[in-house]
Length: 185
Length: 185
Image (cartoon, rainbow over all chains, first blue to last red; front, side):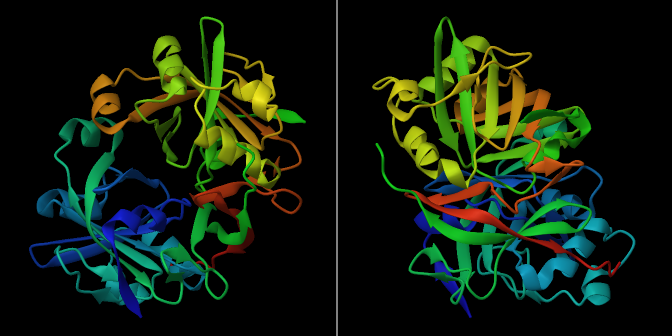
């Protein structure tokens, strides 16, 4: 079940560096791609940075709507993640081809991707120079959600399902064992 | 043993989203901090983005030298990582206090941190506006290294030691099982 995450805790959904799905919608069209290059940028209000290549259809939808959603996929979505990251919405209908489930967001036009571990609804900051030179998009998280089995009491629980970290060519790592550092300072 | 990683493969050292140590040196001083917010930005030449808070001593050294090193710590360095990320080089000598091992880099003044899984020697891009507004630093990777037991044939091997992913307050996740997606596209 999808449960809201309060904004000051939203950074935790990305802090461990998972690969994400990036979705957007504009003018009746919607699309989703994968991005391994995403990270938090600030705590409160939560901001994030994500790299979105120039020639992607999702980027056109983001630039048109100024909104995007980051969904955090799980180990059950390996194939989906690799597939939407390796194909273009200009050429195929990813929703139909890969059975992507689009769910309605609360505050933005971009859809949430069904079956994921967490979701960050984002509004873009106007940084055309960074977008142009580095394909780097900065956005504010305006609403956040997580699966209530995987994220409980504002912390992750990866015992049943895990988030995933892309290496290359469809090789991923699951998020592994929780380790608590001893305090030596 | 530390072995060179060719620059077109350097993105793989960060692609799975590990937490890193950021080090820099200037004018006889050196320091190290931790950063969970770092990601690749381009493949070749490899570039990366890292968030470095305004009030850190390491940032002062980076701004003075225009160089920085990202070292990728392992599960054997949990305590070190949390400690150097929670204390300031303005107040304590982290090298002495936490027994940090500084090793000489090949092309930059910033030291590599001993015992890590990988190292990225970086030169800063001049982006004062991004640094000022978002604490966001863009750099080009000019040399890269990895432990030859953990990174072999340009891919990670986490069977013995793992890289780590910070959640908050000293709670980390080890990088977990390798998963190969089936190709459905």
